[in-house]
Length: 344
Ligand code: CP3
Image (cartoon, rainbow, N blue to C red):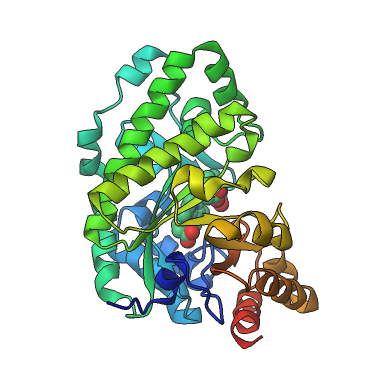
């Protein structure tokens, strides 16, 4: 049967006259309606685990802007929490977790089969969204890629250079690989359940792939994403996968083939003209307007949006930012971006 949803058509490799569009962190603090629902939930984690409210914030940017895709409202750090790590968010600073740096701590994590006890509300959110989304809107599920999630589990927080994870990788390779293995298996189980609940595509966020040098990039970003993609496609034939090894630079070339992903999301550290020649030739690409344009707006936003659309008009393209929209963004600039993409 012919596929009607524009995002799924682009993911299948079709070149469309107007690229479909969605935005990383489209449900977020730049929207007053998000802030109100988050207030109602109490805090960010309570919002993630409340299916009705999580579905509500997922739908808010669809109602306001009519994006072509909705991304499940959750967080990449729910998986470590489901594996038994403590997780909390410090307002204005970000996530904190109990750390995993010894074999004993790894041994105390829960088996992958037990993660669903914690994650069931997330699958409930997906089920609600599968019912409530407009028929033309694609529902995207997601997880963090193992390396990125491991950097938070090892350091217990976000880090500018992922130093603690690199140090553990150097000091105790078997332990580091044990953490990566558990996360890879957990991610397969987590995303499988999202797909069973109604996710039509899944995205792997490897936000810190850029700090993996040389062979480490292949070993710890590409290979885990390849393994997850292959396992999901075996269980759920045809499920499209988006891989996002953020900060990969010239190593974005070849990521489609190496991971088996249908689409490679690119950040704004690489130029769209380069992306067309070196990445899009292998399949659909997603990206890559700098999120700062959502703060600054104006003619700069319009010009750069048009330039990216032109550069990537010769192949399959899903328009997005290069990274998540920030809380300081002006909602009117999001509308200007959408109007520019759709109206020329
Ligand atoms: O994109 C979406 O709209 C879907 C929901 C989503 C969130 N986080 C909600 C969120 C997704 C896909 C994520 C992914 C995520 N979470 C990543 C990978 C993408 C990236 O940004 O690089 C990472 C590294 C995390 C971990 C995380 N969650 C951090 C570091 C923070 C704090 C930084 C910040 O922006 O505050 C979060 C919190 C978070 N996750 C918020 C949202 C909307 C803000 C929380 C709030 O409402 O206070």
